[in-house]
Length: 164
Image (cartoon, rainbow, N blue to C red; front, side):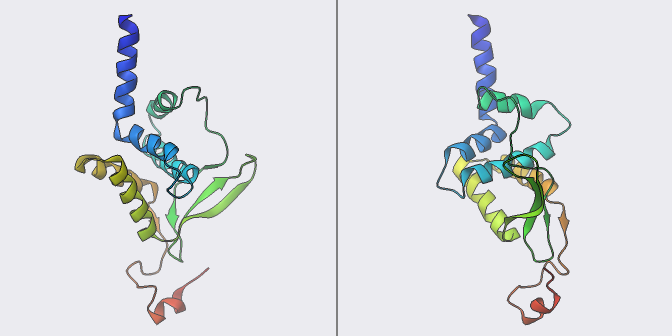
């Protein structure tokens, strides 16, 4: 009986981590963007941030009993900001066989930032947890291909330099 209590305590500790709380929140909150899409983004961020450890599969098994492996559709690359300012990444379709390059995940970096801040608020991340979470987001979306990231898209000159 003592072993079961220890295992339960360990599982509860994993669920209480900010990573566990984020994944759990995206699977249970259907009001936010389609929940499975946001969950795919969070899963991709965490997978990239913790790819050198076995921690993520353990966390997924604790959060989702019966979990064996990730199934399509899923994000299969890190994200980047394209020339139009959208957050894009490569994805695998529902059938699991077609790769879609540069699938738009967020319309802008402000949209990504707003969604992640809202999620962090909903999960009640502490200041230190937020810093760690946003560091992971930054590692997941390292490249900005806009000519001038500071350019206001409403500026008439912005249209001259936009590539699609």
